[in-house]
Length: 358
Image (cartoon, rainbow, N blue to C red):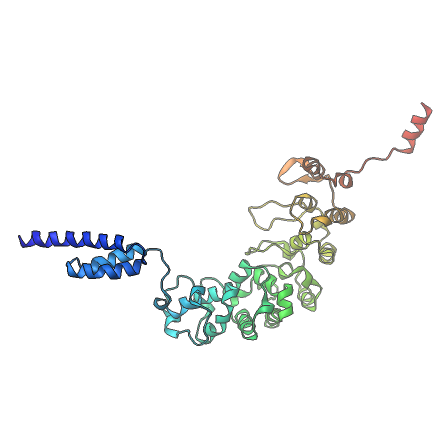
């Protein structure tokens, strides 16, 4: 009998709880539950039931900032701007954050203000599955380093110098890009060179091909060549997401860089070897004809003339279609540059004489 009475009371309490929620429909979920909590207590439904219902009703809501640890708050813009001195070492060592905290602080420029404090309080790149600078270089090809504070720039340079995994094709591209040069971050490349980290045979990529095309005209690039690095070495495969230097120079119509490449590897005017083993070689003339390949489409005609003048063969067979040539590809595209690739044949003197005699 007592058991039945308890069950009846619980059911009655649940009904009253539901009615309270309906009556408090204009209030917030939290307010409704707090109001209904009295019902739950008075009817012996139990506080655990209220908490369970609250969890269900607020499932998916943002976790209140006060319940986040200091690392999570540093990366949660909802909690306001990062406050220097707010990071706790204990949170850094045992954060509930799923990702490597240092990688997030480096990869996302909006979190750069917190980066110096992360490093000062013991965050180490070795604790991350991948180099934080590699993550940044693959997220943004040339970040806005000029907007970073001196402390952030020192932190980024420190990471480049102490993390051996940062000596990577994509990081080298990023550190030699215009924004990095203006911020002075390309100094890290000189450190790598001086400490022997870029010696021939010590890296799994061609450093000359990893450089930003505009960096090929610097003393640093000449030092790499003096060490024995070559343009052809830079045409091999590598682990990275950024394109090789020749392709980038072609895409950006960087005439000076293209002259540099073709002076050292003239065969590139006709054929570029694949970057990975599962890929095919490609023809610069065909690539240039492809819509949206060139950053500046207005330079397409000049680029075709440039390549033709340096030995590119428009009748070369396409690697992916043995029955087609660059000229036929241009016809398929109805390219206005077809006349450059296959100019009309001028009548010969003999043909003109014969025609006149008739």
